[in-house]
Image 1 (cartoon, rainbow, N blue to C red):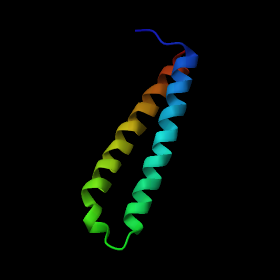
Image 2 (image 1 turned 60 degrees about the vertical axis):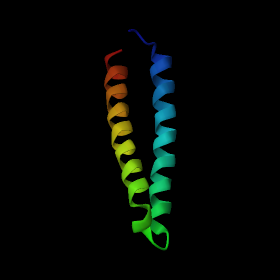
Image 3 (image 1 turned 90 degrees about the horizontal axis):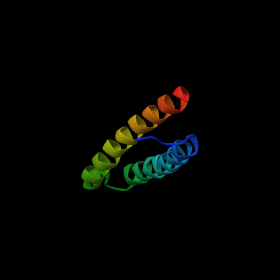
Image 4 (image 1 turned 30 degrees about the horizontal axis):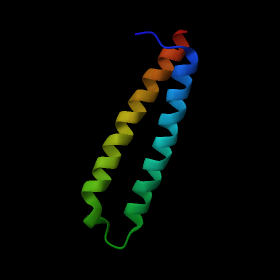
Length: 66
């Protein structure tokens, strides 16, 4: 499947935005009075952050190849 530079750039922009929101969510949950109560949500958000970081790396590699 072929994607244009614009498609890849927009996808990266959207993922970067989502990453920012997820990082803020993790900060907020950890700052709560009882962060252990939110452990599963924190773990889920951290795993999503890792997946999106991997996606950004692949997008950057693809953009560099264009």
